[in-house]
Amino acid sequence: MRFIFLLFGLFFYANLVGAEVIIHCENKEYAGQRLEFFSPADPVTAEKELAFTLEFDQSGKSRTTVNCSNALNVFCEFGIYHGMLLIEPNSTLELKLPPIRRKSFADEKNPYFMPVSFWFVTTNPQQANNLISDFDIQLNQLTDKYFDQLYFRQSRKIYDSLLYFLNKKFDSPASEAFQFHKKMKLKMVEAEAFRLKPEDYSQIFSGIKPEYWLRPSFTELFGKTFGGQLSFEAKTLKGADIRKAVNSSNVSFLLDHVKSKYNISGEIAELALLKMLHDAFYSGDFSKAAIQQMVKSERFTKSKTTLINTTAKNISAKLSHLQPGTLAAPVCLKTIAGLSVCTNTNKTKFKYLVFADTEMSVCREQLKNINTLLEKFEKNLEIFVILRNTSAAAMKKYLSEDKIGGVKLLDETGKYIEEYNVKSYPQCFLLDENHRMKFEAAKAPLDGFEQQFGTFLQRELFERQRK
Image (cartoon, rainbow, N blue to C red; front, top):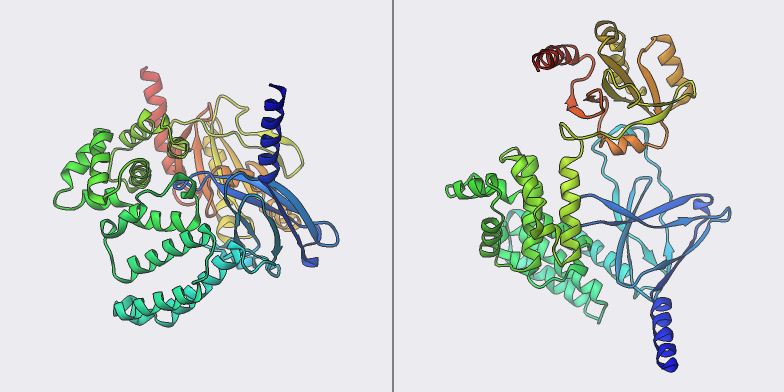
């Protein structure tokens, strides 16, 4: 019996050790830098989880060990880059890093800035990351070269030639990860070039196991295929049944519809419906409450497939985040003077949160109206100006010279900018006395907030007196 337990222990230890991945790199440009790598939490939302961190010493060297029992896709955003990396169990990766390119001033201020996507490569040319990187470069070059013939003239001959060239160049036996990536990317080109309807190629997803759902090539094609489909179908001649099913939270009907139309079944059909419901919520074409109810149904939240369960819960959390009536996260930061302040301390006044960047002229003009708002609504409103971390001297000079009112908080790390999903400046929110969201898209100080809040306050106070 002891011998059996010993064998079991050795087997378990061997598997544990075999699951370790060693990642190391060296680049003097990165001396003292820190790169955080994240893994996507699900195939639908943008939620992410910290996977590991590379910390570089003063000579530019970094080394870390990651426990990884299954293939794991991670990404890292730094400077102008969005770098992707595939980690496979029981491997050693010596990464080659690109030259450091920091965002320009214009990039920092541009809410629509798109990072440069690339695959990290290693010193091993046969490693999956290298093959994927080489393939994507070749594919992009070919589609750029034959863009007109492929996407406008829809030449099947050009597409077949492209397939022939890529299959010949990448014909040697390669890892499953590369083959899967290649299959998804080529189907994406075909779908776009020949304007294929989603139902014309959606069967490609049949049988794809959940362990592949977080691969970038999967999420890209999956998003293109099922994104916005409920809204599209609801506007067709036969869309009445779809609208009725969504607004009545009829999960069974919608799931049967997905299986029938897209020729898929099982867990992938459930994932497709979750993606459709996610997009339908933001379309404004359906009852939001009905969609939230469906996403919370046990069909998804108690699924035996862990990733279906996780996806449903993440979508549910996202759909309720910052929605009217939900409890908003308190902002706890230091003021310009260094005092610690939380926005949920006062329980007697409404809270007006203004996220601003003092390096932007539009924000500087908007903030000048803060004092007018305070004078008019002093008894009922607190105003918090949450400032993006910029040049400290210039910021203090502006705030002082223009005598900007309100409680001015500095978000040095961008924690609350991310928490409140701020994409452009200024962006404003109105909360009630208990820090529950009232307006997730409140007007800016000069763009009508005075009238918006005045009308709201009059109606709110009247309703409270009546009750």
